[in-house]
Image 1 (cartoon, rainbow, N blue to C red):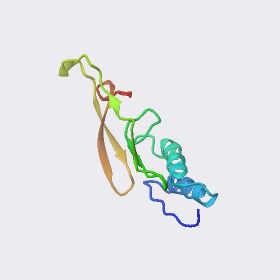
Image 2: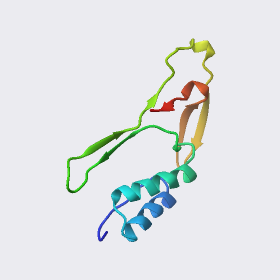
Image 3: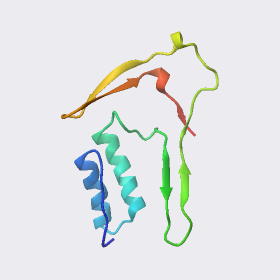
Image 4: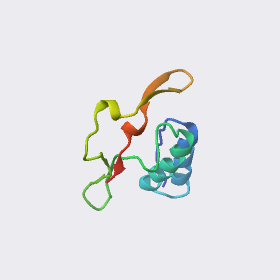
Length: 109
């Protein structure tokens, strides 16, 4: 690819995506490289089992929305039975609080 731009929360993630573009990959290839990289560089924020959305716009076709959001358990537990805890992620210049634990889990699908 002759032109492209990459932005990411970690320099190594951006570098992985940029390397794919420099080697002739397309934006989709670079996004997948960034995904694998971010699972290592920022594991508190991303994982291969996470859910989300991806809008892809092929040059010869209409845009496609990939929906890989998550399914939560169908049987609800009482709030007392849901285990969570606070986790502070230190980004250097800033900190962000996350809630983690079994009460925050879901299944891709």
